[in-house]
Length: 333
Ligand code: A3P
Image (tube, rainbow, N blue to C red; front, side, top):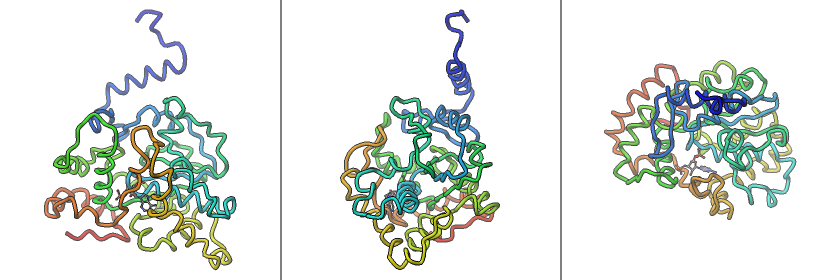
């Protein structure tokens, strides 16, 4: 190597190491264009921001971290967490930030907005008010050490695999991509999903990582189910508030604050906001792609139950063997 090409700054050295790592890791091109690497046992579509997040992020005891697989209800939980934590700051719900800001603006995702090298995507963490509300899709074992060792709280939301997949499928159709996706490719994508070959997969490892930590320490990790929030939003939002250290008082409950927050954060309410109907918070997709049907069991409209049963077998067995079962969702074929 000539002296002129030798890395000289810390950044150059990090970039060099990253390139070497990329050469050694198994890789797929997600949607034909996003290099996605098998890193620490999961498929990582954003290697550089992930390593940067793992290396540099210092959790505060007061942080609240939302963790989820994409399409499991992240947007919903972002709006709920923000509204519950900041309810005294915005007592007049008619002037609430959710009327003018997309939930992803209010609870930032580490990979895109905080540890991304893309211009304009490196927001200063020190400027965030306390408690800092942040979100990640990285599996539990790969979280930065300080998230695990500090007293910060993790809210995890999961969703049944079939609706998660269908939601992901529709989202893929809306994303800018190099690969042309046609409806008949749904089975190929479903097979990949069941094998764990999709961003942040596998599904079962993601869920079990957070589930195991929740069973070890339920004060550290709250485990929520999308279907539970659909069935019983009132109780689930109260659970969320208690876990985050800001329970609703009897006076607030009598004043219907919980119901009002649930209503403000509902799919119908958010879908109607101008900010969510147009514009792009993420450069690869329009905001309105984040809000679709929000139904439980929508998968039946797209997948054949007998084929699904076979393909889903290994994933379900793995969950069952580990002692995990959904509280609010029963998979009947
Ligand atoms: P569907 O595609 O099944 O409609 P994520 O936010 O993790 O990307 O998940 C997206 C899914 O959550 C989509 O599911 C979307 O419609 C649904 N969703 C978004 N906002 C919601 C809300 N406020 N309440 C319920 N579901 C919501």
